[in-house]
Image (cartoon, rainbow, N blue to C red):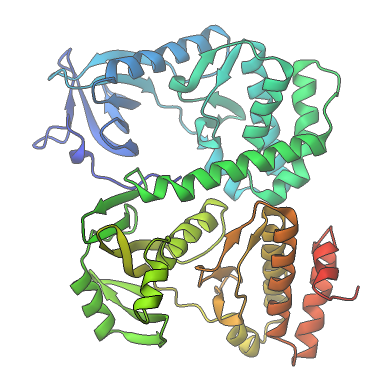
Length: 485
């Protein structure tokens, strides 16, 4: 996930007066810009050193020396194999001996493969992934394994792929099955529609680079890709975002538990502050089970959704289960992980009584866009109308492929940006299903509820039906939803 923007001064070995890191040879890293942070373990800085633009990895903690040595060794193995990787310019310690530090040359101009993938049109995106697959094949051919396969661990400069993160490089000869698992892991990092469209050419590119005869069906590889992605996302949304990590600050006492996004600009809060913010805000949705308010919290425009406890029996039924605020927090991060739009999740707060849950709050950034019903009523641009219909149905198709169901696809839970993109809200009923049949039934229900929004608008209803029939390569969920094709 994206790393939070954190001030370099928060790093233990940065001098507070100069904003620099003094090294053991009396040289210094200056002009520090933090680009990646693992709290208490590792900082990666863009910096200046001896008149050169560099990247510096600063390792902290009891195992700093071990991780720095492993990173340097991985880079040496890549270099010995003839694979492009930034040169290691210096290896040593901070002047106070509290950190192990590696300094690498900065490759410029260069684009991170992850950022590049997000911006390229599909044809060029496929060419980029083929280059990464060929680099992966070259690593495997040299007896090297990248154990932390992410697109952001590759750079593109002058059409050349550079491998990053020596710490993740191990020396190991893979058998064919293990090699294909690594290929599946790399492909799992792209969006689901690209996975389906590109898996066959990427498999062919890998086989060609290794000089192998085609023995694996692309459908088999795709199944493995989807399994690996689902497991990766589930680990993130069930474990990582409910503890302190680079994306989240977690705080728990006997009376509360809260998770705060490190990139959202909020800090930990308390119950009175949340209640005051709700009291002075504009009520968007009153109700017994939940209350939704547009307000300001810590000078930010936010939406607070409070999940109420109606009575003691309702409270008892909710006490031992994850709160609906936690479900919204989890599903907002799930959508973001998949590259889908939802208001930025900022904070999740639960009241606790001896471990039992009480009222809970989900705080997200305020999204000013009109809902889908309002958009289609007011839209006079036919091209924009067609774009939004396409975006809406494509989003549904992605959910189908991912076995995700929303659970309440009212038009008011879908917003439309001025670029015609879909923003999804009200996520506490969203699920990612493990069983195909359950996912299919839930998806068919989502489609029926979506179409029900425009049952009286024959033109829009028929345009949606046409788009569903064109975009969905598998019409099974459409037939189950009662759509006649």
